[in-house]
Amino acid sequence: EDKVVQSPLSLVVHEGDTVTLNCSYEVTNFRSLLWYKQEKKAPTFLFMLTSSGIEKKSGRLSSILDKKELFSILNITATQTGDSAVYLCAVEKGALNFGKGTSLLVTP
Amino acid sequence: DTEVTQTPKHLVMGMTNKKSLKCEQHMGHRAMYWYKQKAKKPPELMFVYSYEKLSINESVPSRFSPECPNSSLLNLHLHALQPEDSALYLCASSHRDRDTGELFFGEGSRLTVL
Image (tube, rainbow over all chains, first blue to last red; front, side, top):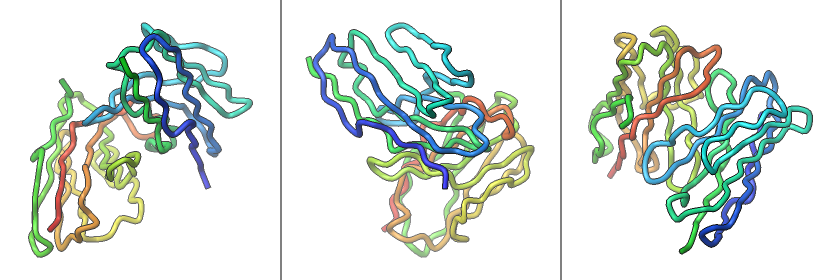
């Protein structure tokens, strides 16, 4: 059975800290891995990763995929209170199969 | 602003009611999805339509009936629901289902079943 496992499930940090969120997967016929941020409503797209070892970067956020070890990380540097959200990892296989998410709280 | 529009934003219904959730996108996407999300849980896939044909049904009970009248519209017809069906129902679209890529989500319809 396909699995997408995120860790930690929740995290509390202070503004300015750097955080690393983890996503491991066991999926047959893997195509891509995506990261989404969800606040109160719909998930919003962050990154799509298809190739191993190539870092994708957007401002303070970056992500990388390791297809040999079957995991991805999402890094957020210099965290701000607006980064507080649930971060969802999903593996694409006809549709997106989501992990349980990491709930991040950034305190002032 | 999201380019996937869902209506209504909130819906309260009794167990004997019949109602529908609607979703619309004008991005030319040929794959559309329904997800169900309970509180503090990730979205769970319900249905996938590809080129207006149902391609994935994740063993969803028949009290949920999807319909794709055309490439821009996706409906979810609801009948004889149970209180445990209360959830946020998210519609999404993507360019095509065989190479899904990024899903664009609507803001969801929050359903309460009394």
